[in-house]
Amino acid sequence: MTADDLESTGPAPAQRPAGRPRSAEADTAILTAALDLLIELGPVQTSIEQVARRAGVTRATVYRRFPDKTTLLVRTLEWANHDHDPGFTGWRDIEHMFGDWAAYLCVPRNRVLLRRIYATVDDYPELGSTYRSVNGGRRAAVVREILCRTRDLGLLPRDIDVDVVQELLSGAVMIHVGGHPDGESAEEIKTYFLRIMRQVGYRPPVAKGRERI
Amino acid sequence: MTADDLESTGPAPAQRPAGRPRSAEADTAILTAALDLLIELGPVQTSIEQVARRAGVTRATVYRRFPDKTTLLVRTLEWANHDHDPGFTGWRDIEHMFGDWAAYLCVPRNRVLLRRIYATVDDYPELGSTYRSVNGGRRAAVVREILCRTRDLGLLPRDIDVDVVQELLSGAVMIHVGGHPDGESAEEIKTYFLRIMRQVGYRPPVAKGRERI
Image 1 (cartoon, rainbow over the protein chains, first blue to last red):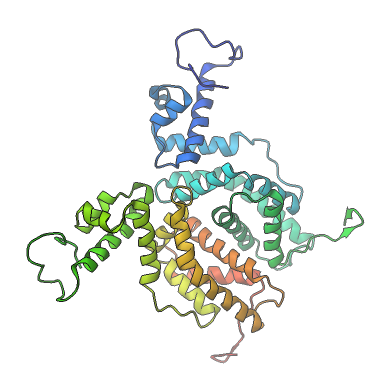
Image 2 (cartoon, one colour):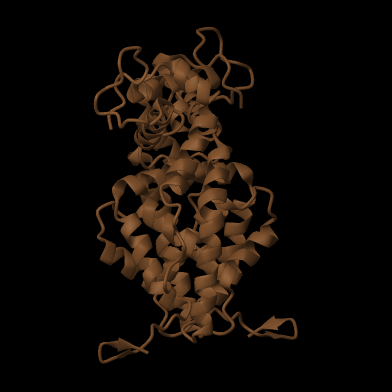
């Protein structure tokens, strides 16, 4: 969609689906613009004025929905991390999980977003805590469950400290995003996580012909 | 020292040590101010003007030494990470190393600086690469050597991948700095690193009476 003329008083643009409320279009345009600017410029240099201009709405339209920049950016993160993926129910197994992480982390835009969120700790602590509660909260529980299941299958040492390994994996994501070049392939990134898991005693299931046991 | 009047044309302040060149005082005042502002405000919001004001010098004095903000901040990081600790020769053993890391990481100001550096990747890539080459470069070699020595002493698995474990430890630092509260004690932080090392198979030397074997 384009956000042009969302605030115009003229007739609705022909391409707007009938029955779709104009305010939902403005919401999407504002949140899309805010996410793009957060990634491009970071939270310090993003302003309500720029968001309004990019979204093709007036500043008043933004302020009616979001009283200040922090509220807007917090809502943007909730929207980007939750609303876009409401059907997330988990991963089949740990290899599936790392494949999914790698697919996310090979997209440069996603990497910049993670760096921007990490970078906000001191200036906008609300952004970091929103990210942790929305994304981290529900995903963290699933990651933990996958690690426990992997251990119970005998693929991780019985005495492993699941909390510590989970924290290690978060650190591995941060170091990859902050220290590796943005051009790595999903395959390379998955291998990176598997090399780390090997150090904590992960032994993948032995292939039996083409089957996994 | 105070940096007041470094640029004045009047007589030198009485407290300035005889023979100490005025330009070295200005250098120190500028770098101190730049480091403080980098920590307080981050690189985006730090300006040459603010640095000059904080250092008690004119903008021209700053520009004569550092043609732009990036050059100034890069030099500030070199100075903060290298010049202050030129005699670093390594650690006795891995426990000594983690004790040293913990002593550094329990100081909130150091934690903010690490976050600020991490946060600059997208806006000021030169800062991150300076940090890595100055601090990371020489320290990384020493960390690697300690890990190899620990393995050779039989305290880590013989088949450990030292490069992966080193990367894991960098990730552990980032996650601690970004995700743990700033108030943890050095003892707690050292324990955090030892819990991580235990997951990759570290087994500390067994105490024999009060001796270590």
